[in-house]
Image (cartoon, rainbow, N blue to C red):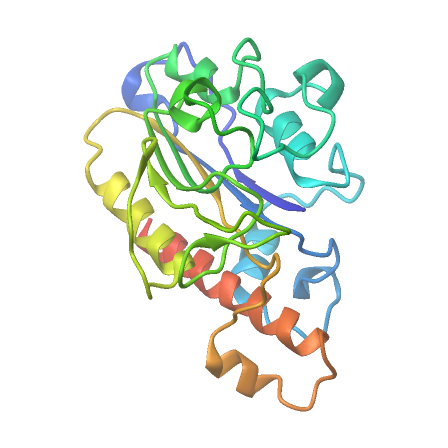
Length: 251
């Protein structure tokens, strides 16, 4: 898991005009050194490299868990997974599995201080209403609730039962054939455009480069000759980097 935090540490008690907007970007299953800024030479990541060049790099920063759900629980709550109440990945067949509603998230904290809050991308912290993004402090949620999806059909395929998994504020919707990272980028830009003077916090949790590897054809061509599965992975990392660059350019 690879995290990027763009955050100005101003007091939440400052005047509304002085409070910064906050963008939390979370990649999924990206190797910690698979960025040009960390010395990788076979994958192109210009957007991430620019963030690293103009920001702060934490060389001893660790994910709280080796799998998705407890790591995300810690990321959003500031607690260890055990104290956040989630020790392992969410069971999609158990509605009681997930981040407990009693766990206070960063979204709930900032919402209480007047921030608009949005979650876009992968959730993987629960399927019941009170465990979905809008039950955990986010005004808006768009993406998939489970661990991974096919990026074009938006179906979850992992030992069954296979199911469609694309929701907006808890309501299922369909965009067959549309590339999920592009849907996320469009949703993020639309949501930001709709904000006026209210400060906002966005949790932009892309599902890239998690399986299934479905990078843009141009990146697969760029990495032609690279051995499999490094080629497929590299193409997906660069596909993600390009979307992050587009979002930062929009901002």
